[in-house]
Amino acid sequence: MKYSIIIFVLISFFSKCEQDDRFTTAGNRMVQDQIVARGVTDSATLTAMRKVPRHLFVPPELIRYAYDDNPLPIGSEQTISQPYIVAFMTELIKPQKGQKVLEVGTGSGYQAAVLAEIVDSVYSIEILPELAESAERRLKQMGYRNINIRCGDGYAGWPEAAPFDAILVTAAAEEIPQPLIEQLKDGGIMVIPVGSMMSIQALTVIKKEGEEIKKETVLPVRFVPLIRSE
Image (tube, rainbow, N blue to C red; front, side, top):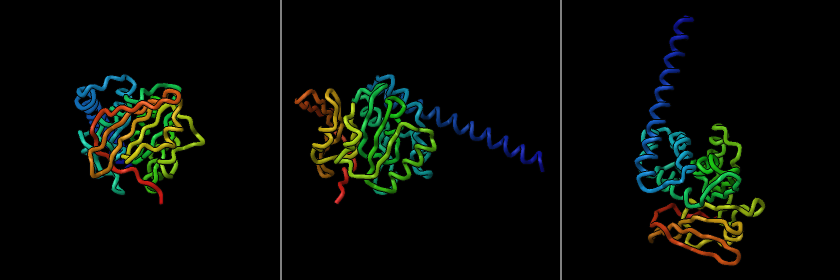
């Protein structure tokens, strides 16, 4: 009986190691073929994308598709973004150590984890309680201690934690929320998809320089809408 248990433990251990190796290989291939090949060059972003295990942020029945080149449903009519879009938006805010970043739209917590690998602290807001709770639980289990999650209306931002070096919005707003502009640090960058579900959305980069707000559209995209509280 004792030897049977030992054999079972050894088989389980080696099976897990083999599975982990497959996920690591899939993650490295994802970064090279989907992200580097499309022009993302920021080393911190690429390292974070390789390190964060994307398969832990998707529903169990979709794990086999975790490293594919497309978004995936995560429940509550929400999605985890395409890997390239996550990397591209991360690179756009020019993340670095010492920064404090606000994310609007926690979802599964994947984007927050990528950011947390680079910056000092991440503040992430999710309006859907079930997603906020599951993301917070997942991220804590994975050992992230520099991510703060709040359930609330992301349109209003997180004023008591402001100002932020960068703000990253992962849902489409029909207009750029003024509270988020106000919570952006002088010299800060915000990336946000702008437009409705019925029209082409434009990924927009906003740079705050004193009293001047500069806007640039960089890519047509399709995101789920930014949900507002009643």
